[in-house]
Image (cartoon, rainbow, N blue to C red):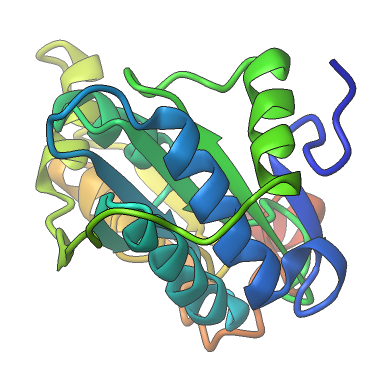
Length: 227
């Protein structure tokens, strides 16, 4: 099935235009929520985001969409994308959302959805959600609830477990946090692993994500390593 809005990594575009307006985000929440409603149990979606200023706008719109079709929402706050996938699985959520445009500048944003189990949606499921989106009517049934879950501890422990008993003692690490979602988690994880950590680009203001730093500007971290 052809897809109109979804690309290779969710729905992306310029913030507050096209597919990245509050109106569209609310419809995505309604359509995705409707698609993943199964049976009579209480349904739950977890939503994370990076540090882009437009994340607040899209987050609120998604909450309105999901709760309007009866899904409970847990907001995770700024958190890395893999943490959302992990929490979908560990919390047995019906759906996960990450509001982010990865290495793009703050002008852009995106909505990435995770299926139950924290896996990437298939092309077919994305096409089916788009089909629901195009034919949305007025929501029916009871509304969902909103809550928060801002404890990054389980994700940090999950990452540290990959060391399998080893540590980074005696290793000095320069961390370029790109003024993004990992600013508050990555330094603590590396320090907990025993590393001596020098952190750069870890002062997000909503507009400076990936601005002269991060994956598209490796010269910053390269110079810091030499220094």
